[in-house]
Length: 125
Image (cartoon, rainbow, N blue to C red; front, side, top):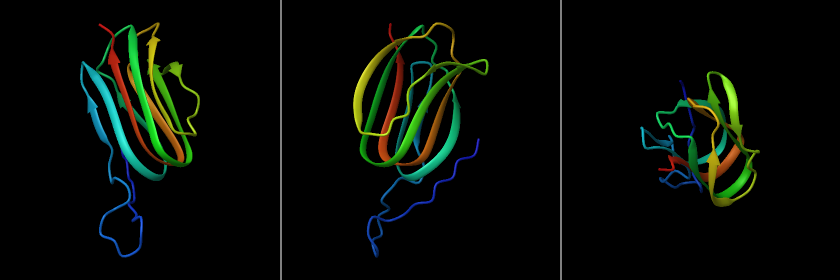
């Protein structure tokens, strides 16, 4: 997996980047978390999921939205089993989602996406 992001500054002549260089990713048997403050990101990234449960709590937060879209898809054995519509706005929500079959990967697709966002998946025990 390769992932490259070019940073930029909010204002000229400032030393602090406006956006993160890399996402913060946590993936273990208890949760998957992806956090990124990105500018004009276009990418298609797949992460393996170690989390296995038949019901997921999905926490999604998109703030400081400026442009583009984000799509989230769960896969099992290369088959799409759950997808969310493209997000093109700010949102702060928690969903409880039953998942009919074991899932193995999460795919994040972005197109010219500028926002601060976090996706967190946990099982419901």
